[in-house]
Image (cartoon, rainbow, N blue to C red; front, top):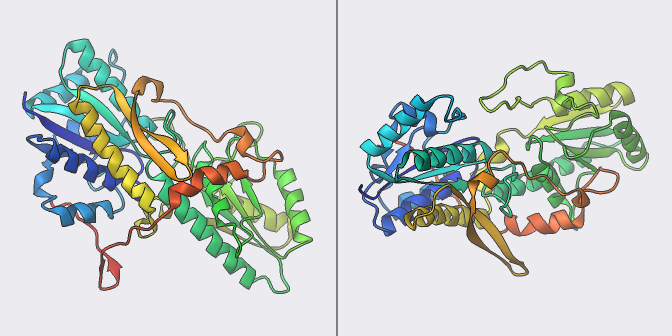
Length: 410
């Protein structure tokens, strides 16, 4: 079998997912792989034989630098759940037929929790049937909810964007609060993990008090207590800013967003679409307190703002992509690359390799002791954890005042 490698991207994009792709490509070239293929739209596109030769897309070092600065998934992404092996052997036979036709030695999948489920199943099938390919996962998710890794590429840049945006929203609210009260509620991604929402606390500094309240999905949300907190705050100030996770739930397990939005969409992995939390709470507060409110949903801006990407995050994403190729080339399979934090001051990290079976379908939540006792803010330990990850800038290549991106040519 020739030493060919194939790489795919899966799940929600990030501002640095393409930096991991660049790391895969550069390292595979440096280690002498014959061909480097890219799946179009992940494993779902691969099943339709949608793939390209990446050497025809990335021609020089400038293209690599553009790719590192390009948001979204360059190859296209998917949310496709492979069935269990015993349920549909035909789909696995199809995948390995294509892999063998392309003489693939190493399969790299850049993604989050659900993508690691794909790596787990493919590596298990390969071992079960005596196939020789190696399967390695490269972590990616702004949600930062992958187990066993200190943090995930994509999280630092999203946290930086959230901290910056919340600070600007606070400033805007202060300018409008003369002789009138205003409550602004900012909805932040993260589903069942509050890592992104907690990053709103990064806006706090010498020139900003930060958000007044932060609600993470790790704890039940009580609307009555929420109103009481707002009433207390409004006695002291006229502009209040609240950061809430899209995934906050009531005591009975219902998502707050389900109280007003009827959305039955569920993806292949059983995830409900979460949206409308800020709007619901803004309307709730306006009705109960008879004051001006505003709901703001940062939505996909959190994961696509490459102009505000963290240098640490981009460099680590590149490092992780390279480490995935190295691991496969040295014989590892059924593993995921992890980031290990070596020290905080100065901040240093390294990569490691862990069994994907201990990572897939698990969910890392914010520790309870990193949330204040009353559940309305994060602690200094949380801020100390995330602060190193947002450091440094990675300036876009600007053309006529607008960032230039690398575009896939089909």
